[in-house]
Length: 382
Image 1 (tube, rainbow, N blue to C red):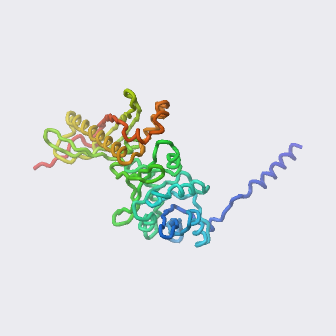
Image 2: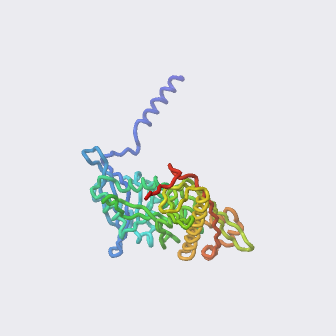
Image 3: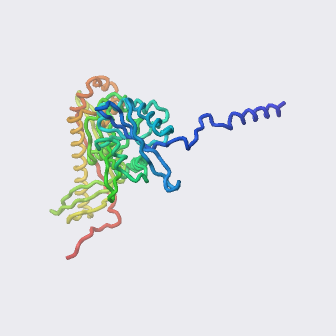
């Protein structure tokens, strides 16, 4: 009896495990690497440009090709691609969504609604704003021979974000989450067409600022680095500071090894203020100038110059965002919610007004850990 039961179970298992219920023929599909979305105001239509992976060099390597379609909605435009090429698009491997400034200003929520609802879009797909007039230009102008995949190039850029430190990657899920977070406002990296050795490539740099789902401004690459410093996302990169020692000046490039930033809400009287504590570890990477900065006393002067420079840049950036954009991209509100929930309940209805006048105190501690491979400055003997 026991043997009969085991035999029945084995036969039943064979029938339910030897087929794929959602099996698809690979040669009947097109794998999308990334997508650019624009809007035609005249025709009142969305323009969707899809970068699709293809085999090249007789199947030995991967390249890409572009498909463009139009529709009254993004979903309609995507379906139009299927009508044109006769194959279904497979979106699960897509790495990036690039949107035009027109989309980011007026129709961003509509686009995100579609990508969030479509089960094939991964929620960790990168989302970027195009600095070019049209988002499609990022695909059309880069890698024109289509032997390399632009979207994969962008994905690699975000994987190496820590060593570049001029932008902050934003997966679609995190952006959508920030939109629903009361008080906090999201940012989005900016991409443009750059040049590398005479070759057009996508270059990521800077950060778009949003408020209530619309793009209202942007940070350049230097400001984006300071933004990363404030939100404790700076992992590496270079920082250049001018110093004067014994009446000799030098421009010293420091390499950031480690950083820790803490944002703490505090109360003074009946007013809340924000304290930003930054501690960074540096190494001396390059010295341009006559000042001798290696000696102990000189390094102390350099350390203080670094601290003052970082402090000023952080204060300037926070003040600019407060006054010009009134957008809490630093998540000060989140810190107040966590540390002072009762105070947050009082100021939540007026947070926009509170934020733009919020007092900020910045404290910086810089540690100089080394001077690379040499303990002496290079000098020219005349």
